[in-house]
Picture (tube, rainbow, N blue to C red):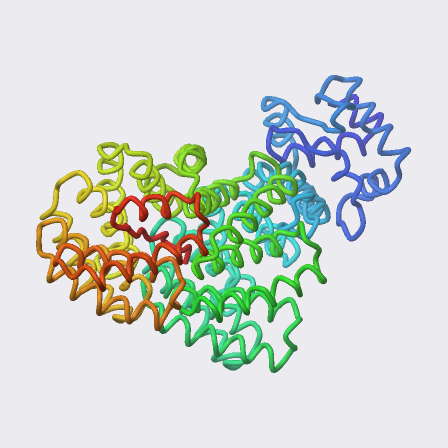
Length: 580
């Protein structure tokens, strides 16, 4: 090193800058970004001149002070060399060289963590962000790099890393700058989202509400920055089960943005997507579908059909169509989405687990139970391997898998998994979130089919009480639960109770969902079977014939639901816990 100090001081200074990075490969492209970088004159000249930079790198290689990979265009220092280098730098020079390294890292930021083409670079930068202490450097450009790395971890699906880096940034920057700084607030929003992904919904809500209130006080309620924070608050409300309050907030934000920027502005379209989620969760599937289709058309024009936001919008349209009872349409759209998602993001992309879960639901609804089971098996394995069993996505995937196990006749396996899943929903969401009774409804079907009639009936009775109180008696989830509860009464021989419940529920189902919605047809079929058990053959025959004819039109004559109805089997309904 002494020889290098004399023969090529720029090479030594370059080596010293690299010593502040992690003992991992450093892209040589990063070391060419000398614009707006402070440092020793010899080093800055070498960084800005390809010939001088090449000489410096060859000098480093000649003395074997670092490993140069021309194949990967990287340089990497051994830990021992790093320690010696750092230990020999005078304190004043060390600060200057460290600052130079931070600025080089900031210059290497591709500035768009949502774009998959940039993920390789963010992954290459990440160990150096962690190791170098750049989080504590007081500069807006390096803070932007850290924020983009946090967002990358979210986009890539590393939820633990997402949480840890967000926590570090919030703690460090709040002490340095205070909560009034916009980049601190942005980090706080990320941290709240990371907490939400860990099931810490109340903590997330408090974080996001704090940022929303800070921005509203400084900029006003209709400022774009305040509305951005409000989006996070509204998502928390959905996770807390406050669907109606979330809907009202989403509506206000959507109308404000549409008024300010127009309906085809990317910011408005982002809010339109969230507003449609709230519409769907509150049971207004037609309005959600209309809005999602409009949003999807705009996003194709703006970003193209393979952009992440466009694909999320297509997935939303598919769920809307499923909830409207258009199972074949929903399946085809979800197949398209899964193919485009894998093409755009790769087969190892974390988001594929959610896509596979959705496709599994659509395949089951369309009648292919074996294919649905294969898909839910893969989806659950992906979720559990990446996030563990106690994660919002893992729990929903497990619930879906339990339904698929039931549909192929594996009742024991279905009940065991559904019990675990129902307990996890209760632990994560609490007793009054609509997802918790929904999980119990799916468990109750398997229990009834397995002969555990009283337990099934008690679960459905409790679920209906919660859903009616939280969502209202006319909500589609309440309707599904009421249909299954009537089947519980039928199974224990309470035919008259079953008939009265089904008759009341059929009126609500047809009014809310439409006469030929699959849920309405299921209820009509079951009412016919109730009446047959009560020996009211004329009305029973008319209703079952109408229901089966409707199933032939809606599902097709070969669909398993149609075949089961023709054989006189009651229809069971399940609930897919829509992502909130």
